[in-house]
Image 1 (cartoon, one colour):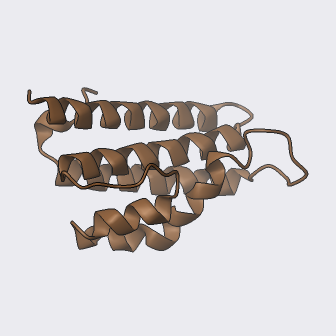
Image 2 (image 1 turned 180 degrees about the horizontal axis):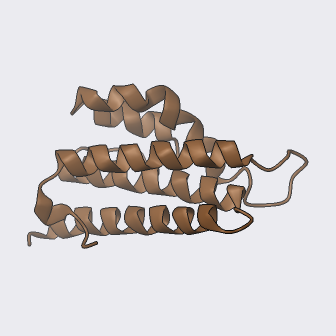
Length: 136
């Protein structure tokens, strides 16, 4: 596999791992909503970066999901439909990682984040060749 395809696969493997951890945290008897939200943000960030690497598109090193969606949309307009639903995941990158005065995300927010992350990940897989896909 050419080196750039291997890098894309690494990004997607890490995104897949974050999705798996988010699902496990969601499936607990007492779901860990903050952990779900964090890992969903991470999964979306990583799969979008994998898509951009495959497209040989430069991007700023950023956790901002809306920014990454916008850059991806310059290569494939299908990403635009996730601008409003995936963009808000950005706050989960750091907001709930440490104690703060704000309440933790709700189970509903975690469920929504997981659904969005799964859909974005699938969109990326659908637009990349199978040799970039991580093994299941």
